[in-house]
Image 1: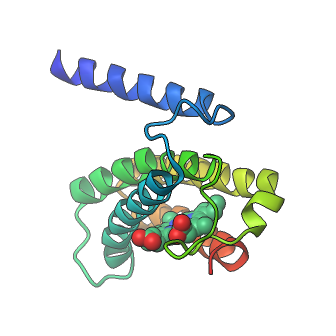
Image 2: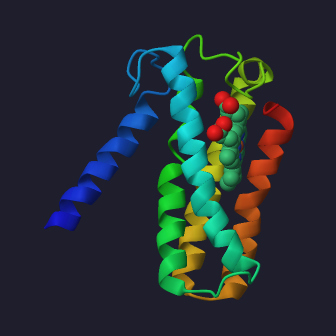
Length: 156
Ligand code: HEC
């Protein structure tokens, strides 16, 4: 019962975040400074989950299927979150952000890279559920490619 309620709330949150991308007045925050903090926080937590998986993929930590599964699910949920923080008017580069102006000159490309990350994060959930490193490794590498690809273009 409790699990059902939580997943319904999550489904609602995901629908909301998808439908509000084009509407700058309906985010979880309402000024540019908060938007920058919001996206950076989300990216950091996303990275923490990703790094925990990387340690197991590289063999630095012993692979534990349940732990990996949890990290993959949290990573996929988080992969939806940062992008709204770039869609707020005025949340442009300043002293406190590494985001490059090229993002807003190439918004469609930026958005499609974000969507690719979400797709690959969901692929990683499926691979994690298999419990096999042979399936996890390529799915993890596919997700990892998105980080560097986007950072090279759009992060200082
Ligand atoms: C669609 C583009 C894009 C993708 C994909 C992407 N990032 Fe980033 N990332 C950015 C941008 C732009 C910034 C700079 C944000 C800012 O400072 O406002 C950033 C910043 C960060 C930061 C620093 C946050 C902070 O506290 O300042 C971390 C950590 C990070 N990304 C991790 C990742 C990881 C890990 C992945 C892949 C799993 C990833 N990112 C994928 C665009 C992307």
